Image (cartoon, rainbow, N blue to C red; front, side, top):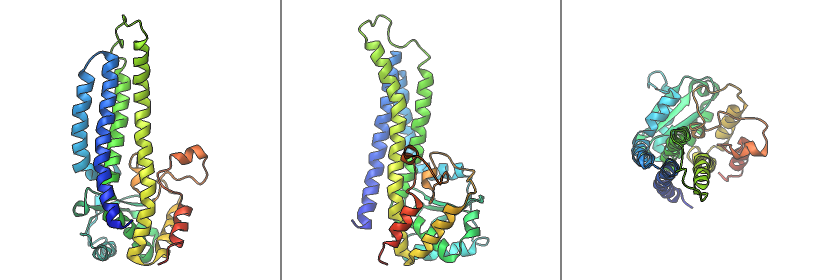
Length: 298
């Protein structure tokens, strides 16, 4: 599979994801409408899903930057960073992305935006403090690969849509107590079945959307690692950077469960965890990523 094939696949996945999202939200609305014997929740779900899909496509990057409290980086203050991003963008054949800084001591980075012309690369101040030039080039090349692979839109849309589904599920669960459910004259058990259906929808639809986010996130990190190394031609730079980031115990303050998958390394990383905890990992283990990088013939 070529990188161009992967780019097209990610664009297709984005529209498929938005379509699935619309179905899931409408399913939530239908479940609640059935339980409350009212079409109002369904109409609310339909209208809300259309509006939120539009917002997630056009403004997901701004939403993510706001959540992360990232600020634009000036070329004068971050001259070396600008040079690295600019040189690697030329090498990758990409437009120069906007550069943002998170005032965080925890070392990390992410990319976002709906396409290469509207892309953003964001790094923490802590990352700049601990990495040398070749290591920083490895991280920037990784983030530019997310842009080049066209998975920044996919990952950014996922962040917004998963968060919206979680909020709607919470709202719907509270809304169930607005009324008394199905008509009390429903003596054939359909009322109980309706309640079970509604509860299952409210519980499992957000879980399904979250698991989809995690699966996509883990896969894209391996691809971005390999693509980034093709840019720098120096795997040791990214390997060393990943080791330093992984060894840091400084927590990232401005991160949520929905934005954590965007970062180059999991902000919530734990050194030891059970098999159940591993299901919810947003990133593959660093040792697996390093092993994959060492196996590349570059």
